[in-house]
Image (cartoon, rainbow, N blue to C red; front, side):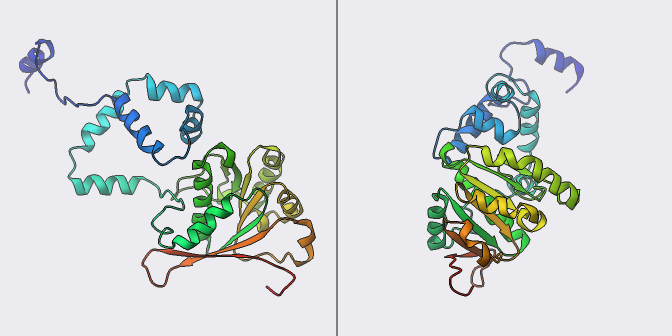
Length: 278
């Protein structure tokens, strides 16, 4: 388009100016919020949205309800020029995995999912997730996201020694980059711990903390008497000599890859009893 035509288009009435995108940014974000709400059991408030995107409530409200976001419209007008295959691949490449108990990797075993959903209702106790590092991290994160979607009564806090590069983090869990070093991991855990145990959250997720910060083990067991503590570790800890500290149930969730279905995971959930050999 030459300059003369461009000037005419900019000033004339009745001409649809390129790119003539039919949605406003607020409509896009409203529709996105509606899609997210469909996956929640309770209202997706601005407070919850603020935690998800890591901003203040006021900023979140401004972004979603007021600001015009011209850059979002520019992004969409570029995205729609891709072929459907390119667009799908682009989105899949740039979105991390979102683990929940409804994830295709897990929902192939409805019986195991029912057991885990029942376990999420437990108000106190200790659950141990074991398996390879990536699989136990996936399952622990799925438990956290599923609990958060059920509403504030199932609120979650925790510490995870993984930078969430490949998965969507639980918004109320603190993630510590594993490259930080053990000394810093221990320091951060000890500083965070008082806030974790005094929070109103019913569930506490700890990924790697039991083994990497052993001086916290007694505190973790004590916490299991009034919160549901879920730890992710390479193996089930030997708690035979400490069982008396946990009057509440202890469960083991062993996650592995399915031998029958490609990419699917299988989870074996059992209650532990140290009065018998493990």
